[in-house]
Image (cartoon, rainbow, N blue to C red; front, side, top):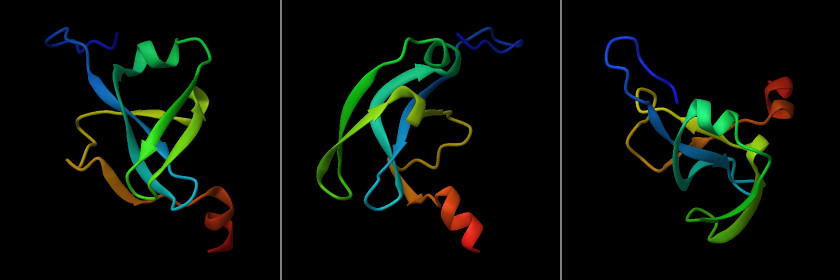
Length: 89
């Protein structure tokens, strides 16, 4: 677990993925700390997307832990630009 030097408490965040249809960042509903998530074995999961209203299948390598200090309070966030879209700009 990630621990802060001051409090020695784990920093728990929400596992996020990108909706492949809309590009929005969405919550998977899973909570963990970055260290545990990065050391987890490869796994496959499904998450219902409230944006496009379908199930998305994803691997752990396609997700990240959104830590509380970065979180905006919403479970759905702005569209995420893909690498090819960055290059076009």
